[in-house]
Image (cartoon, rainbow, N blue to C red; front, side, top):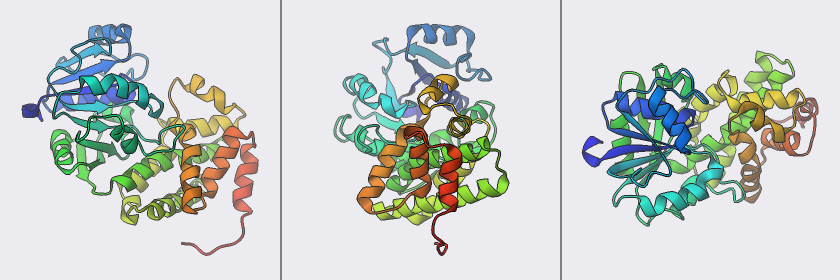
Length: 334
């Protein structure tokens, strides 16, 4: 990637910071672009991200700047977007006129566009210059563990040449990247697994154990696959890193904000207050409405996701939601 220009990571949250560190450790020139000049100045001075990822240590080779810097994208060969789904329109307005010719764009965001329910690749295609190489990275990649150099794997999907470049850029002793030709499936997995993780957190918050969690993961994977294949994705994608892999990590990890959101909901915290408590965006809550809309259009039933929506936005107690799932009519396993 070095010969193609600098890697610019837009988004100074936990995943953006960890990703910038990962790229730098592989020897490539990296710039991390923070939302505010204050955050950029603090991270440049301390080499830490105290607000989002205190265990992070940024290598000296990572340059840190802010969105206000007119030269933030100078010399970029790859722009990496580590942003919440709700930030896409604003980020597109900032990025598009500044994007160097021929520069590729890699999205790390896992969700759907709020309000429209569009896949984020479609949202970005409407914003970026025509012909911009675009790809997404997904899989079980908690920033907290990537920042510590713990082993993990991911998939990249999108424009083939860009996918090959990203695979070459990131693959190393502690990070392994697979190319997946099913962009649709990877994006559906990334969005849907966050909603199932909210349900898993609700189970945790109610004090249920491993049996309940295993059932939710298994049936959650079934409904994710059902939706994806109805939309035209490959069922194999849902058995891979973007599907089962990320589902397991997001539903079980102490790092998972989506799982924690469900736990708080089960304890009676209103959904509207959860992001304030966690100081992080909860993509599962932002995504569930769009996900269900897509399912309704495709004639697909998503019972777990439906109960998450009822708990989050209709005030239905978590215990009633999970009881509703258990009282569904008997059925054969898919």
